[in-house]
Image 1 (spheres, one colour):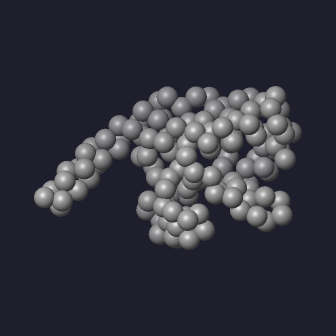
Image 2 (spheres, rainbow, N blue to C red):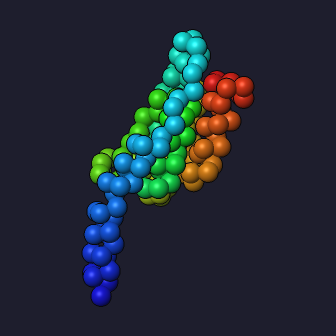
Length: 135
């Protein structure tokens, strides 16, 4: 019975994934327009960040859409199909749960931020024009 249920949900995911990715593509907002210097500062700050995600996870899609709106070039690491990224997430982050934002500070400390709402709040507080600096 468990095998049947597992196969059923895999089948449902297989069918829904293309529609979810298409909907993401069609509804992703345009990026905020910044000056060249501001965008370079944002890009430099984004080099300290990495998003561990699954491509069809609705919460990951929510975070990616906000990243697109803010014009952030954050490295995306697929923890679903890349075993190295998956093991990094488990060993360093503590659990395999996505989305997860890896934040490296200037002094080399690493913080792992889980939960889409917390990630979006962090990105908005740090990169929204008129808010805190890009450090």
